[in-house]
Length: 296
Image 1 (cartoon, rainbow, N blue to C red):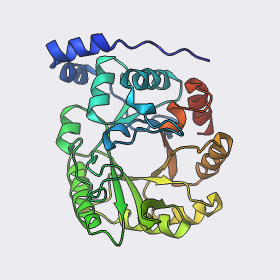
Image 2: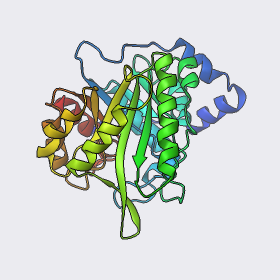
Image 3: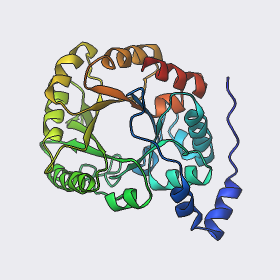
C-alpha cells in the first residue's frame, strides 16, 4: 500500500494567517495544461462534498470531516499517473495550491454549494461557491454545477434559472462548465436521485438545452440503475460527458465494471470520482485510483 505524504496543518494555518496573498500567488505561477491531453480522456478526482454538509462515506458519518486526512488522500491521488486533475471548493483548492499539488493539473471549481444535504431549501441550490469571474481570475480550467430537478419543488426553477446564467457567464469567458443533472423525487419522505434510464435521459435533455450556447457545456452523468441502458441514455445529447463516480456501496468490482462499459460510449470522455477512490474499502487509495485510470 502506497503511504500518504504527511500534510502539516500548522504550516497551512501559518501561511493562511500571516500570508493570505500566498494563495493568489500560487495560482498565478501554477503550471497549466489543456483540459484534454493527447490521450483525449479525462480522469478527475472529486472532493467538493464537505461544503454541502455531506461528510459520510459508507458507514462512517464524518469520514470527510478531517481536512488533513482528506488533503493527504487527495495529494496521493493527484500524484498517480493518469490522474488529470481535481474538482473541489475554494477552501480545498486553496490548500492544494499552497501544497503545490496542482502543478500541471486540471483544476475544476465547484460553483453551487447552497443546497445543503437534507435542508428544506436543498433544491434552491444557490451559487455560493466559485463564480465564473473567480475561476477566470485564478486561472482555473473549468467549473462544475449541480442541477437537481424535482417537479414538485418550486426551488428547482430558481436553480434552473441561475444555472443557465452561470453557463452563459462561463461561455463568455470560454471556460468549460460541467453540468451534473438529476431528476429527484421523494420516496418515503426523503429525497433521492432517480437513476432510472428514463429519468437520466430527461435530465440530460434538460441540461443540454440550458443557456444561450452549449459550446462550452459538458455533462457529468451517473450510470443508470441498469448499466445496459447507458447506450440509449447517452444518445440524448451530443455534448461531451464524463461519468459521475459516486459511492460503490461496498461492491467495488461491480462499480468498476459499470464504469468500464459506460466509458466505451462515444460521448463519454472520462470519469469524475471522489469518495469511492479517496476512501476505498481496503484503504488503498493508490490502488483504487490506478484501477480507475486503467478503465480509461
